[in-house]
Length: 122
Image (cartoon, rainbow, N blue to C red):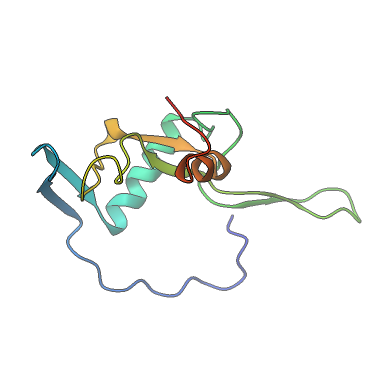
C-alpha cells in the first residue's frame, strides 16, 4: 500500500525494454532492463528473498508500508526494499548488468550505506 495520497505522474517515454550491449571494460555481453521489465524483475527478486534484506535481514517490502499503531502514536513507516547490483555500474564500466545473477534485494539503509561506501556486502 503506497503512502502517497495522489497518483504518481506519468512516466516519460522510455527506450525499448531490453537492451544488449557490450561492457567497455571486459567486452562481455550485458543486459539492461528499462520500465516495466525492471518492475517485474524487482518484484521477482524481492519475492525470492521473501522481501527481507540480503545483508541485515530486516523487512524490505515491495512498496512503502504504513502500519497503524495504537491511538495517539504515529504510524510506523517501513521503507520499500531496493534492487541492488552485485557488480555495480561504477565497478563494471559504462553499463550495468541487469541479469538476475547480478541482483540482490536490500533494505534502503543497507543499499544507501553500500552506495556511499560505508558498507561492503559480500
